[in-house]
Image 1 (cartoon, helix red, strand yellow):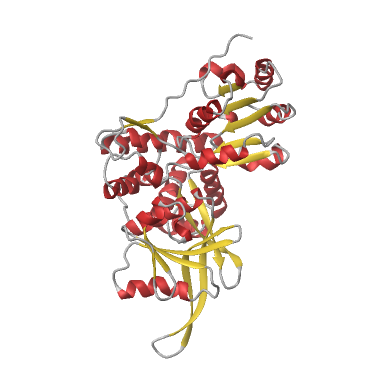
Image 2 (cartoon, rainbow, N blue to C red):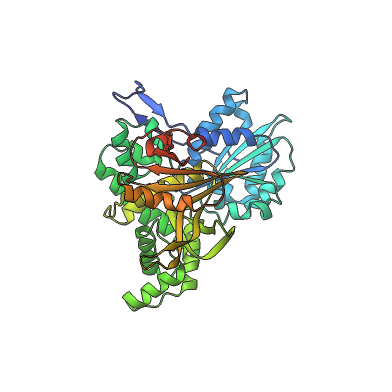
Length: 442
């Protein structure tokens, strides 16, 4: 077989000037994902790196992880790199040729590391990887950009030998580590332009906004439309607009369908809407948070909340018009919790309160997030402004109504350090929450 030219990846660097790092160039580190790969190394499973397009999966695999392997004694000729989205590797999209090439590259019984990028370009890739798993001296790592081909198929297609590493756009901590400026400026930029790594390289607002608008239309939406053979492209675009406008608000496909019928006099069935939302989730553009009845200890199937994986993409879709700090903060907190590995739901608490006429009335209070990881649980409220007593009572009322002793946290705008009030609630500013990975443990 003729020599295969590997697809070269450009190392993501941020040019720095008078930064707090005092360095000419700084590589964006993705330590949270590197640590996951290190823990999963040589575990006999296929490590499947998933996430939204342009979030840095290939950089993580071909640069950061490869560098780690070399620094820990792995020879370069024992690292097999194949990027299937490169035209120079087009022939390796044939599963039999790819399998043959990998077998021929393995020259001895020492450990080899296969780094396979954008694996969904190869038909029957599951068969290739399952066959390679029978070779005990190959450790396999693959990336992909669509959960239909990857994360949703891990257990079944890899017969329980698939292990997912979900990669997100830059967290605020990662973004801030290479930002050329102060916290407030970094926070404002992050709220507007999000954390796709490429945006960090641009110097002007125009460059960032044009990049985000272009890739949303020509990469993400086009990808969803083509992969799922969607005919109603305008309807999908309007659905994206509705979801982007309603981050942090409860909704469901039936409610969206009724909005179409009443305001647009068009038919867009709730089944079609539900299917299209699934497509957007599969492309990692959005995530959903289910409603959880805290007192009843059960899920409520009616309304959900949807959040965008990257706020820059969400804002670009809305032409940077809707910049509501409270909802944007809520979306950022949700993403940060997911990055930290927590399961995140929207909480509800049923209470009976005294009405103005003296009668008792039933109300359902909302807890922004019910956060679980193993036996840990946190209840979190997100409040942009807590300056007034009325606003404090509004945020505390839901937490006071929760009948258990798990930690209750209020995250506010600003830079306040964590502290406890007389009721034992932890209150902290966004800066403290985002820049301390262990902030919930205060």
